[in-house]
Image (tube, rainbow over all chains, first blue to last red; front, top):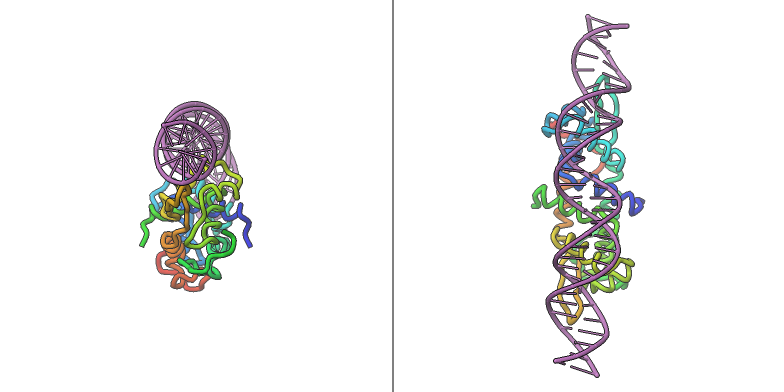
Length: 107
Length: 107
DNA sequence: CTGTCATTTTAATAATTATTTAATAATAGA
DNA sequence: TCTATTATTAAATAATTATTAAAATGACAG
């Protein structure tokens, strides 16, 4: 179960064009991930700027990295994303986010 | 289907403590929503600051408002949230976000 | 070791965002 | 109409964030 702060951090990490594209590419790549430089070339972003964004995504727990030779491979980390989705959808019709007719008593 | 820009805007709207709490409270309230002042009191945030945050959430399409007498009621809008979740989870095992063993050919 | 490639870090700048206070708008009731 | 209530807007400030260029680190091949 994620804390509110962890969820805000994950959302902040994804709330930026370049980082959202990085994450989506890594999701599509699966566990093997992709090398930093390859991602940079693919997204036409400078390596320095990519590092900055990798850091934000890593710190939020959304991606992880492994060194392989001279390359650093990044891969999507699904647990934080799943926790984030759970946090956003809970409290509404058992997590089914839709215009439900059973409002809680909290209001 | 949401554009990348719409998704970034929705994520940005939720990537802030007060707004995340506003949204979650409204999700729990269902379609009837809650009055602006009631939300402000509940979250211990000044009305002016709340208006600022309501605007961000509204502009992202995450909430909508209706006037009722002197009160303005806000309610969660589920379509943008659902579009956002779809955008985040697509490209991975038919939208099932998990550590899947079938990486796409994109890498 | 030395040089090269891949990536990260640092420093500087530009741009965006959150919060507060004060002022304004809209509605309802005396 | 006058006043109180509810909410929004505007202006000012403080804080955070993204980008660029330059320098530094780390890994490997020769």
